[in-house]
Each structure stands twice: as structure tokens, then as C-alpha cells.
Image 1 (cartoon, rainbow, N blue to C red):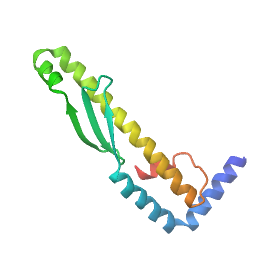
Image 2 (image 1 turned 90 degrees about the horizontal axis):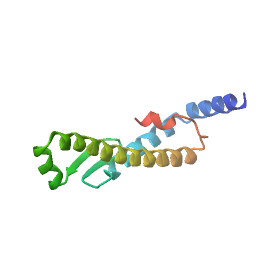
Image 3 (image 1 turned 90 degrees about the vertical axis):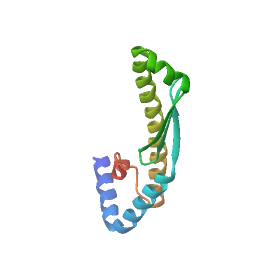
Image 4 (image 1 turned 180 degrees about the vertical axis):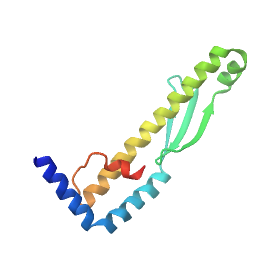
Length: 122
């Protein structure tokens, strides 16, 4: 019951400060567009760059892995997994940075922690 009252108070606060909140969300989006993180596969053969808006900017594959892809179907399958691992690593790092940015902004606005608030930026 107390959690529901807190949530209702937070929603009321959000409505009162809607313009401030919208400006803050826009600032976080712009800030996160400038953030770049690099994820790597476990062996480093694949490197992926992702920005804070969860967009893949680049994927690099080592020359040795590319050469092996042409020779063996199993190597191509392994490469696909390595690419997925690197991208997922980078996305995970970007999501962490987004959560930190959202928490910082909500604290600045005096808004209590609300589950799912970071999803507003998606």
C-alpha cells in the first residue's frame, strides 16, 4: 500500500513537472547518443561498438577469423556466436550507462526510483 502511495505521488510530481521532465529526457537521449562502448567476444576476435541509444555502430572481425570463415562451415557458425557475444556485451554496457544517466536525472528532478522509468527513453 505504501509503495502504491509513493508511486501515485511520483506520478503526480511527474505531471506537475512535465516540461522539465521532457527536457531532461531529451538531454539524456542526446547525451546517450554521444556515448560509445566497445564489446568484445570472449577471445577478442570480434569487437562491436554500440552507442548509448542501443544502436550498433560497427563490428570488426579479426583477419584470422575471416580467413577461417571461408574454409569451414563450423567456423562461420562460431563467428556468428562471437558476433552476437560482442554485440550483447556492448549493449549491456550501454544499458548500464543509460541507467546511470536516468538515475542521475531523476534524482536531480527529485523523482523517486520508479521501475521501468528508463524504458521511456527506448
